[in-house]
Image 1 (cartoon, rainbow, N blue to C red):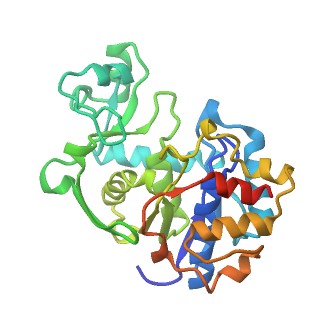
Image 2: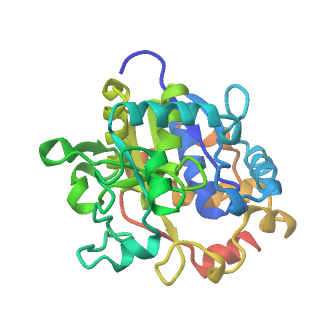
Length: 319
């Protein structure tokens, strides 16, 4: 790809911004401002019942409090459903997807379904070629179908890419991940599709996110190919997670790690940024401002595996 480069901050308002999200967004912002990329802000608010209205507002306030800015107006996925539907229709016309009436339990019970690294059952292909149309699937099954992407068989289903942190990767998507959902039975576009449609429309060239989404990359690359946009596949960078002392990614079991919680406790933005900067591999001891960190940031310093949020870190924040 040539021309101006663009990345995005993409909070999902299923909950408040926490320390792990903030570290990823800081690293993204620093990479972008250091290299002169454009930064878009996209609120990923498609996940129906899990969306908390106040969480989007809170995430925007937290980013501003940290001193992280963006270019242009805020984009919300909930305003872009027509774009996603057009992409689904296009993929249907290309024969790249099919209706599926299997429930999650059906997939889990399929004897031939091994399990992917993330613990999700691999879809065994039960509905591949089963129905001629969405209407036929609905009529014959009595269920509202979801839409699945048909991972190509053979070499076309193998994806190779280079990640800035994880290096060269090669994934046999059909064998390791299986056909995946691009639209839920209620019509909601799935994460994999919405992200690709948005990144194409927003001309995103750099995707920076936590490495719990590393398995999403080969799926998304297959969608770029199926849509005829292989030349627009972005560069990927998957940052190691922030985890608790138990080695598991930050969650409620580790206490309240929301940025808003620390703000209420009187933690300054400078002190918060100093901790996040240390988690980005920088030697920072005192309160800092985001702008001060731009020249000091080096993403290669983040290659050492997960960052542990320790009791000492907590004490330093709340001192």
